[in-house]
Image (tube, rainbow, N blue to C red):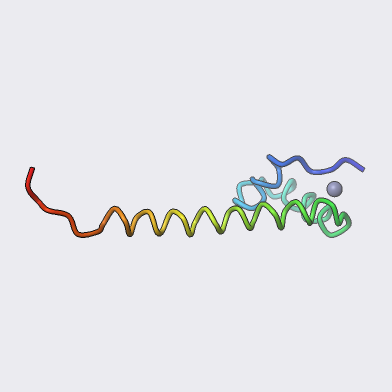
Length: 68
Ligand SMILES: [Zn+2]
């Protein structure tokens, strides 16, 4: 069995895979605990990045004197 690469898993999370590849990836993930675990790890990183992005935007919009 060929395992999914990290790149494929990233694209899968991004929903950027073409349909046949996405279906193949889904089938593999259903059958392969190792790749499901990798996908779970990656999706954790993804949601953390999103959270970080949000708080960074908040910081950038903080009150700031308008003199320049
Ligand atoms: Zn696998």
